Length: 210
Image 1 (cartoon, rainbow, N blue to C red):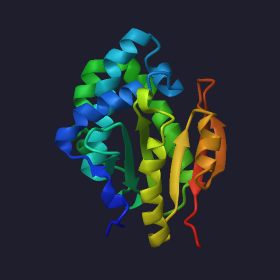
Image 2 (image 1 turned 60 degrees about the vertical axis):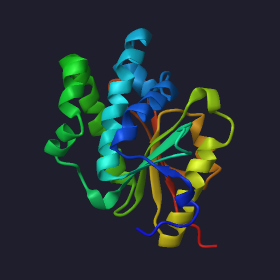
Image 3 (image 1 turned 180 degrees about the vertical axis):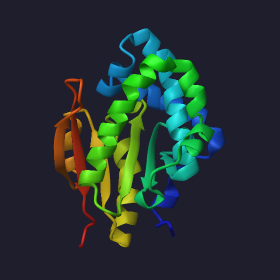
Image 4 (image 1 turned 60 degrees about the horizontal axis):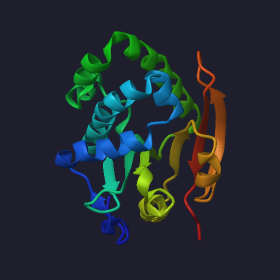
């Protein structure tokens, strides 16, 4: 897609930037409810999360778009277009899925799979046919509250408004719901991840008509 001027002000990540970006995501999500469910031990969690987000960001760079506030990467946002459809397993392996499996082991992977299945089923139910998925939004904790999330989001929303394309996201953090509502998102659905006490909100942002 042709990028609007404000989107060009952001730094688009390439493969060589993923390792650094994964460290930011790991720090930002160290207390995330779903990640804590996968990796209950805090020390082990911070050991594994960089590899977990390296895998996810490699996939997003390969199949979508990942932007940072600047080359200094105080925050990142990863986006994937619904037109991509379901990513085949071999492509996930190429993005580091096998490496991650070897690191976390079968027991953790067996916890991830039903969560992923539930998240995917909720997305299919609520997201519609065509949308941009906000896969990851992470700001380094020492820079949170300084407007970097807004800097990452607003240029893409301007782009989506110009294309008349909605945006979809999931969050398991209740405090994030009013944050995203400030950007025009509405709650499409809320559920509890099976086998856990973790709530999951599906949120949609319709393109602005103004």
